[in-house]
Image (cartoon, rainbow, N blue to C red):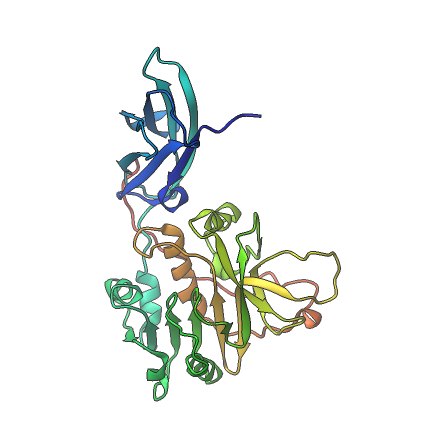
Length: 343
């Protein structure tokens, strides 16, 4: 068995936007004196070395920090960050390896902005969060500080940013009423309430793996590895949506059953959709990253906005679902990505 001497941490788990500066930290895995050593690294695109350097490993506990600017790309591109640690006394190799990098071009909301024209979009978030991102994309949105401000409003689309809901039993009632009237509601990760739109929330350790409905429009342009990478972030726990047995909601990312069988059973999910009245509510407890520099989060937002502009479909309980799923349940618009420069 190979012993791991180093801990290598990449911002956003190595999902980067081209043209931005990113950070990699490298430190010893044990808290004890280690030989004086240097870290040699190279940023590789196939066999082409794009950048590289050699720096000292700290003598103490802290990490060696590498900052590098990633070249712009036109399409999603895989690169590698290769490293080698050598002792300064004699040059003996102490550790080596490589990390896969997924580099993305700029992700455009232009096409989505055109579809949003004429829609009444409300956002519950701080001004520098989703409202700033939508404004930069020229998407007209009304920022509100609290769901109470929805009492006299009529929304087409509602976005509730992470940790914007209190534990007040009245905070979520306007969201449900808006959905019943036909609004499309997206509620991102909440940790303060004990329930979310009628479903209990439960804190659970991050599992080694979740079950993902990869074909769902919310996951367009993201593969199984991309989805699983959300579980490799800084979060030690997930706040699960506890769907009761045979609940009329569609689980999209969820814990696998503990026992085999086809009979309906309770489900803990981190992403689920519930059709309600004339509208629907998307409950997302995934630990998404930064809107500004995490391409996975940006893709999810584009997918979510496009999805919320489609006609709601019923979400029958598991016992009433067909055994096969039609091939084209929902048509997903194409995301247009502007050109850049290949490395």
